Length: 232
Image 1: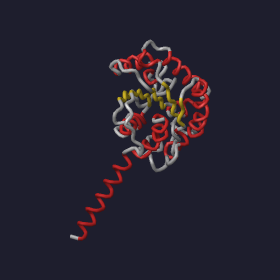
Image 2: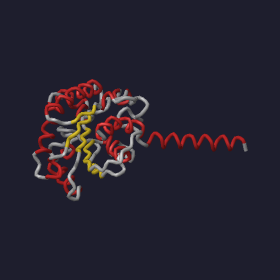
Image 3: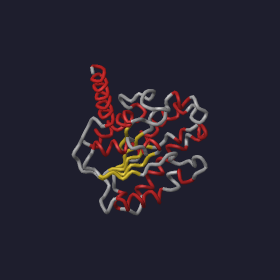
Image 4: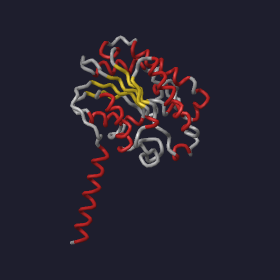
């Protein structure tokens, strides 16, 4: 009986720990309409757009994230993963999904795939492509989108598991550089900026299974500075 009681207590503690990790620390009753554009880190049931939705339970979050997406490169031979090439399609989809409600913020978290080893010699193009994407959004014909405030979230670091692979070798320095160049792009274009590379409390070695994709705890940490930004 004693061992069963101890096991029950242990399971309860683990469940409580999971719930605490899966939920964001900061909650707001603000009614916002948000468009989130990301890569694979935005596609999981516990990923950062879902964490944003949990933090703002009264918000409408339209998430158009996709695994493998880049800002401006053709990744894996698939042109539909290039955000610039499919900007018109994605913006039309976002506009139609708003049901006539103007977006308050557009949240862009891209760059992880632009830092892959295959694009190592093209890094000077990355901030320029980001700037082009911002301008495409602001010049789009949809009033529900083109007046929204844009938040740029620079990509989180790579972990050692990812860096040890040929595909992502050297990517750590590339995403580190993006934290600086993306901030400059945001400032030049009157966007808000969140530095995902230096997120307080984000331990990339323990909060990803593969050094690349954030788990629930990592996703929550990534959006905590964003939640603070959106509530002010």
